[in-house]
Length: 177
Image 1 (spheres, rainbow, N blue to C red):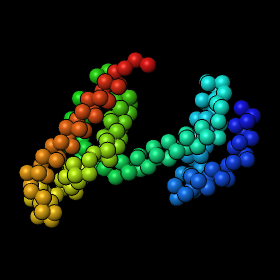
Image 2: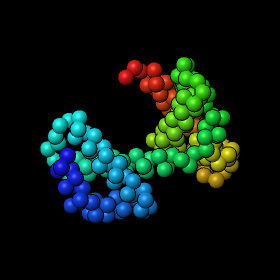
Image 3: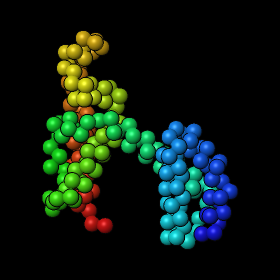
Image 4: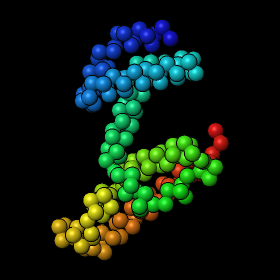
């Protein structure tokens, strides 16, 4: 544990500068740095030792920054619109009730929003334009020159992908850990 503490004190400013180059908000950058070191401490406790500790801390931090960006980008999608497009109840564990159900519901909505970012660009454009910008396929077609049928098909493929993600989530929720 001493070596991690020494690395933190010695490398903190340099690592924080790297995080700040990726995340402009100083408080968010500091939080990500602290979370990464906490993760490294937890891993160190469970694994016993890590050969290249500083490299490990950077790897954890790179993952945390990536997660932060995905969640931030996904936050722009309205939960209400997603709930109109999908039957979320089908993805929630059957035994969930009360606050637990709300936790699962918010987790499902967050995962759906992240999955939207993973869609191929053409499908994402059709889905987001129609669902979140509330534009008809005719309006989109007139603005882009893409046939309405093509836009409709792309939205359908996007919904299929997202519905599969919902189904996978329910399986994940039901797994015993």
